[in-house]
Length: 426
Image (cartoon, rainbow, N blue to C red; front, side):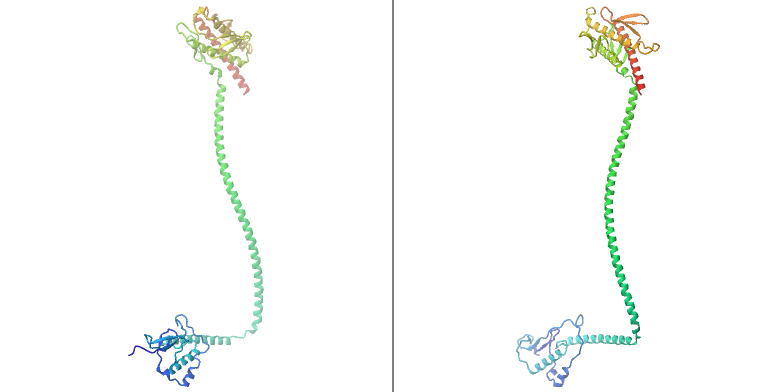
């Protein structure tokens, strides 16, 4: 068999070559007239989806012995001469294509698919026709509703009025909603402002709370300090400042002031530094007592100056020392004795001032009387000189002890007077 096959047409859908039946070459005029009739009228063929995949525009084929498969595709502009049977077939296909929505020729498979599609279209059209007949029948069986038209028109008018009313209410509701949203926005702003104020309030509250806690602590501390200070004040009020500052006592045969011995014995030689310091404390005590009671001495002015204290003679520009440096008793500098005698005169003035205070029954008297540079014991009527020249160390030390005893009594009287005045002021 010759592998070269002469093919003149392809399927207009799948473009596969078509070999025509020999009977298409001998068609008479009656057959052509029948084929010229329309295949279907007014029905659109749907080639979408799974029914028909693709329709391809018509192509023309002419035989050619040069193609390796025995046929050649030629465009519409080809001028190849057609034989009489080919012209007949071509005219036939043009006629069929003009009466149909599809281009011909078609292969057997595409024709079967077209027939299936047409069957489905026919069935769908029949169902639609059946439904149309049923709807027409139901409409024919329906009663005449011409009498209800006026009722329906009235109802329609009422519904239109209701619609207009509802539209108006909707507009009012929308306006009310807009006003409510405006009020809500104001309330939100007010809420934000109040929240800021609340936050600021709590910050200030915490700050003030902390300050209050600090102030409470300070208040409690100040109260504790005040109580402590008041207690100390009460103790100080009850404290004799002179007794605390000037402690007068005795140590054997010596009178002492602030643990400093005043005097010296052959068996207990006291250093002159200690004696001078004791004289400085004694001068400071008498000067403090006189200043406290407002006493001014007539002839002398006491000058406390530690272990070099002295007495200034008023009007003479002369100083009498109350400190010594040792030496032979008979060669002693008389200035030291003069200073001790002047000091004893100041003590006598102080004694006289104290003893004249108060009534006769309540008069305060010092235990030892003073007469010039002598100090007398009232019980034994012994007179002791306060000078060192022409005097023994025992007598001198005892006279100094009597002197300190008088000052201790005077200190007690001044402290009592001060305490009484303080109690009266309180």
